[in-house]
Image 1: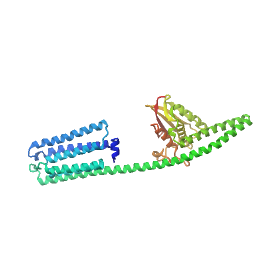
Image 2: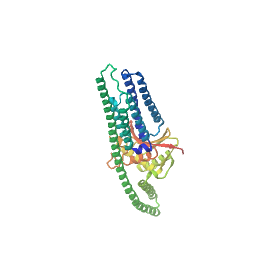
Image 3: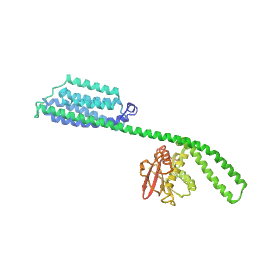
Image 4: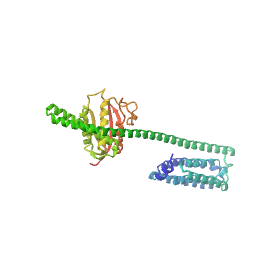
Length: 421
């Protein structure tokens, strides 16, 4: 249901209402022409039919102008909608003045425009339209030609009954359609509001986790520094080959821990705003998969079809998100194909750089549409944040993330807009 703010700021909702009004008008124009053809023999003089055709032509012209506005994509404000509805009321009034005034059974159609105005327009404009409609109806009581029914082969009583019945059906159907649409819009808005509340709750939980992650990262810095100092002391005391090899391995793992702590600190703030720059997609992917495969002990095959295309992303957040996708792929195929390598394919299609993480695992869960929702996970000890973070990184650049399965393989399809390097 459109609000006054939406109508006045952008006019997007107004275009939707105007499009619906144009459709209703086409129905009204056809109905008016059919009615003129049916009632032509009831008119005392054929000359009276000319003004009625002229009134229909005015409505037709107004509809063509409205369609032109829609084709141009122009914003439609509340004032324009008021003018369109007032035109419809004015056309109806002209018809009734030429065909019986208040005696015409189709005067009930006034109610349709009043109801439509109450739905479409702000309160003050809707009140103004109602007052204008009352004034038009009062005008037909003073200035109108009599309704001639005696020149038709159907009896006057039957004609009046048929007119009231048709007018009643039109009014009931139209008002029911409008109210049903309004109720549907309200239910849709309530659904969107509930979804927004759920997202807000998830965001609050993420903030809480971010705070905990920041605290844990700060706490880990001290013991990691201590371990680094002890390793240097051990390296000075012992110079045999085995000790040197062990110290080098521990230093490598210590450096990895330091990188993880750094990512935790970045993730606790705003990853999407950290070190955003242009990078070659292949270099980012190759660097991340290289050090991740060393720690995981699993082979990763990187296939490049991106022609050294560049993307604009936050480096640390991108790296962490790709690690999350790789970990998900590794865990997915632990029970089915633990020895098979994970494939990462970098492609360029229509100025879109796609990073596909392909595994030979267990496939998607029973609720695939929920993959990527925060805290949704099928793992016993998972948090459900890995895919969510990856999707958030892509969304922040205008990209996205989706999953697909084919031939026993699961693909995490992660895409970003390509930029000039």
